Image (cartoon, rainbow, N blue to C red):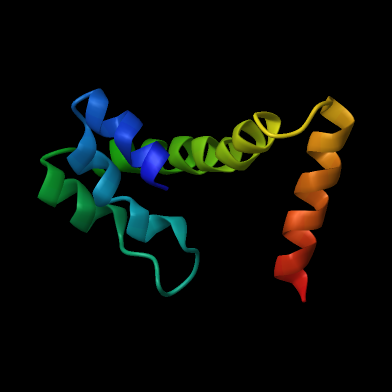
Length: 89
């Protein structure tokens, strides 16, 4: 998360990163886009479009970090399967 936040801060969009985090959760715990949009002085559709982008970037970070530590593509996938299987238990 820190890596993702730093990337947004470096591009001058740190505030846009912080507010939509509450939308990453699905269901009742997610904040309405309109409230976040009003706080950021944006429209709800803009915030709604940013959330999937954040989710996609967030999903790519474990892959990139794992790639830095294992020798082959096959090992990357193996390590990620092992990592995510730990969350299933």
